[in-house]
Length: 200
Image (tube, rainbow, N blue to C red; front, side, top):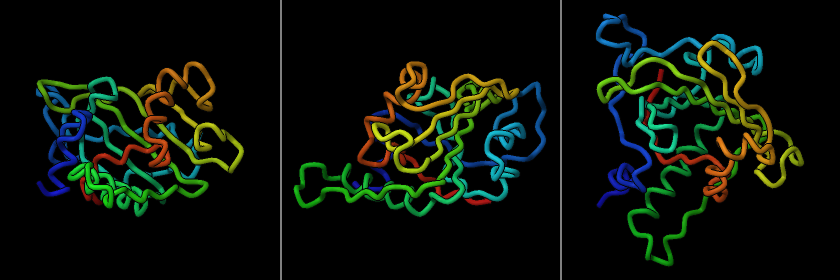
């Protein structure tokens, strides 16, 4: 089995969904699948995220995620794309032959200031539907959150209301996000299990 095929079978966490038009108009009676929601409010919390959907690297198409409330997710990053892709390839190669002792993955860590934005969409007839929330991980300076890779977690609803914000030692952050991301600490807490090679 080739690595690129293996990753889509991994752990049942994600189901790959083809990247289709994300900015076209659609009949709302048929749902709003494949239309990216505009989360303008996020720039209040992350000033450099202005127009991130056009300026940042898009790492995935609309992917179904069993880990994220059975929703579809779209992942963007400001500068973590090369490491994300590297870690994806390392993971997929390992998954293809996990018994090979010489096939241990060599993951890399993200630099301070790396931001991942994950848009979360509900499901409508098995396809991505309306926006539900947006989640963010920001790599802070060393010492910010030493037991959690120095990542800060945020989640907002689609209108900008804060749901969570903080470090992995915050109980709500821990239960909603960090406890799961700690399972991939070797990948610097970012799953990187899906890479669609998507671009603007």
